Length: 243
Image (cartoon, rainbow, N blue to C red; front, side, top):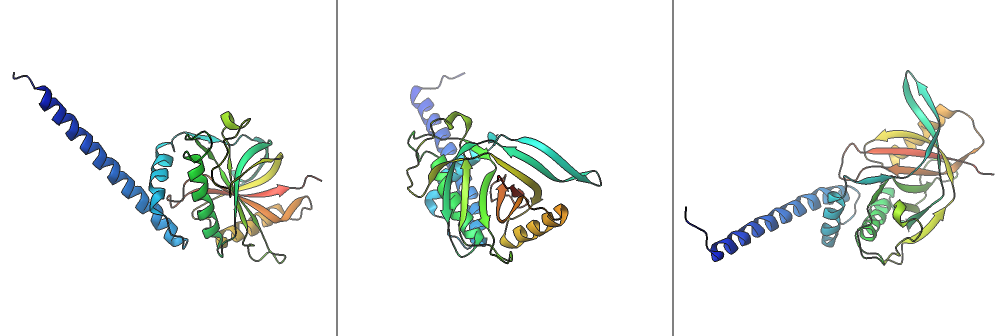
C-alpha cells in the first residue's frame, strides 16, 4: 500500500474542514430561515446577525435548566389535570420591557435581545445556558378585553449565576430579583397570540369560578419551547395575591 505524503494529508484535512464549514453554513441558513418565517408572521424583521446566536441556542437546546418550583396542588377533570398550583422561590431574572403595537412583536423583539445576552453579550463573555420557561408578563385593560401594549419578557438566571448574575451589555436588559410567586397554571399548545391568550385566560377563569385572591389585570405567559416549533408548549399563569 502506498503511503500518503504530508502534502496529501494536509490536502485531505483542508477538504474535511471545507465540508464541515459548508455543513455549518447550510445549518445556519436553514435555522435562520425557520426563525425568519416565525418572525414574519409576527410582523418582525429578523436581523441577519441573529444567525449566530440562533445556532448557539439550538446547539445548547438539549440542556435546558428548569426554573425551580414546588407543586402545591393539582386539579383534575375526567382523570386529566386541568390546572396546577405552584410556588416559585425568589430568584434573579434578566428582564426587558417592550411596548410594540402587537403582543407578538413585543415578545419577539424582547426575546431576540435576551438571546444575545444569553449568547455571550454579557460581562463574562460566555454562553449562560438556557432555562425554561421564559416568562412574558402581560396586563389587561380594565374591561379585560385586550392586552396592554407593554410586555415584560423575563429569563431566569441559571443556578450557577444566581448569586452573581453576569451584567448585560444591552442597557435595555435589567437584572431583577423577583419575590416568591404563587401561581395557578394551565397548559396549552401552539402559537401564543393575543387571541389565544385571552381565550386561555377566559377558560381558566371558568374553571376556577369566583375567587378574590387572584390578580385580575396581570398575568404571566410561560413559553417552554423556541418560536420555530409550531405546536410549542405554553402555560397561562394566574398570580395569587400576597396581601
